[in-house]
Image (cartoon, one colour):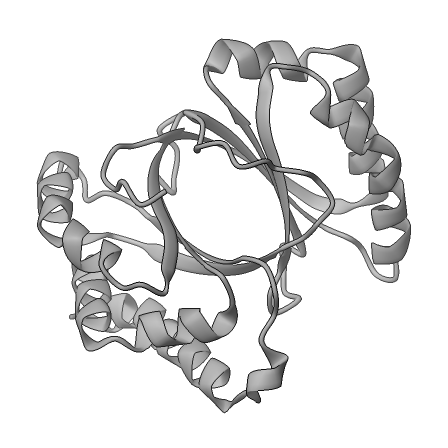
Length: 235
């Protein structure tokens, strides 16, 4: 394995060590999500997906894992693949990634993929995502609050939750903070049954106004559009 491909695995192990060194009382309620971003090898997507089929049962088996799902970038931009691992808390995440079988698979993942990064998120309670299954299309917005602006931004969010959740086109909205308070500070996911529903939703004047206000109150905005794959079924 090359030094570059080793780097993401080292990050995983470092995070794992940090979790184990924390006092149990620091365990957070709610969901912890690890987001892995990977690029398929040039011309090697089919081979990569075939390999994934061989490790699905290993990744899904541990009881600590609440959910796992994979996505392709809808616009075929980098990163082209996203894999999400969700846990009830950071203690379960530590147990999962400390499992020798899981660590072996992760090492193989970075051998097969060209690039990879990891984002650790903690679910917020800003929105009511409901209990529905994952939807086919997901818009993922990321941003930074800006120095000293987090409190004001979150107060603003309270005033626009209903506006964003009412339209029937959007199936789930979920917000997260970066677990380590790094950039991006905040991630918001909007899920839809189809791209047509997503386009219709974001063209609504009231939604446009909310997005514009959010942009004005924060910095470093980015949006990724993802399409749910069928690689995993623990979701």
